[in-house]
Image (cartoon, rainbow, N blue to C red):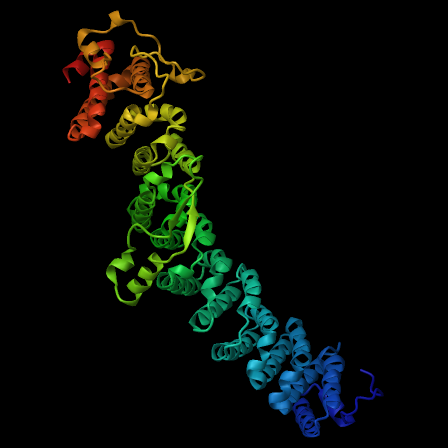
Length: 583
């Protein structure tokens, strides 16, 4: 620093003291500066006040000499104390040089910067809120400072700033969210702890509605939930729990659709805590938002179905996943089978089909709020993405590594879709039929039973009937489907018992083409896989006969009785397998 330079209105003795290496001398100089600025305030001499701040900033706080920087910091804090409530008029000039010192290589200087900013903020109080983002940005960096003294100083400043935000109603949440969204992806444990602590504070302020911006930070919160620190994971659990409570209280203000895919991703996490938490959120979303979640069904099923085969080590995840699966299935209704020409989408009220578990346990304000949500006049267009759902189900059936409970759930879904949306489902039947036939070779009896139920529904559904259905001899009139080709069977090959089950007459129910495809392809499998015939053939046929007896209780299933009985005689005629015939 040039000793001959004029620093007036600062006296030469003050300038020398500010540059001194001893803290006590710099403190004496700061008291002189405070006294000088008070005089300028009394005279309303804003020009001189700005000049003093500029000198302390440019010539000291931003100096190349470390002792000068320390003198500049204590001098700026003295100015703020002298200005009192008027410090808000000069905050930009006071704060910026101090924040610059947060990046200094000298840990002692970073500590002095914390101390100076604490004094500035303490005096200005609510006036610092327009500068909140730069303060938060600086503090988020100091939260991860390696020096314990600096970290301790930053924590004091952090608590002061939180008090100010909590007691103020002028916090700019909209302006803060972009910075929060950026900082929430930090991998540093201390920075994460700092972020979560601020989210908890903002959640606790009645005038701040952080729920509106939850889609912006939800992904980051789930990533923090996987932190190695138990303390940070617990803090994040608490924050997510508070958000979920708020969602249950105010479902009408929640942006469910914007968060659905975020949950789908984290429901597939390898971390058990993340997966369980995300699955619990998904359960509540499906039950609270209802059909709003239908467009995301394929993603939800991708995440949920594998969990159904978890063992007892992940029992909690399995149980919640099962509730998600059942709740989602109930959202599919017959109206979803409307043709594309008739209606592109259903405009249905956002109404859950069942209460959440917590709704069943509690009543009062929560229930009243939920009722308000259900009675809302808001109508949202909802389209069932059946193609995506079928693709996911088909993929899981082809995956030989999936567990038995997942395969059963997939078959239950297919059966449900054929019941609720038969016309649209039959567009996919040709692609599903081969894997459904192969599933008859499954080693699980329960899987085979569910598979047979699906095949029986396909074979008997009126939606599968076509005008050009072909003769009753089983020939396939469709082209381009070699894997389902049905060869012509001569009448002489049928025994009298077989003909009784297969002959067509005006009094017998009409069979759709998939009945013939099912029988012929089943015979082909028995013929090519003799082991399947010997080990599972009797069970398959006996199961079909059992299904037909169960379904015979209603006239709506009379056709199935005839069809399955016909299959029984047809297979016995062609296989000639004695043990099957005896069964």
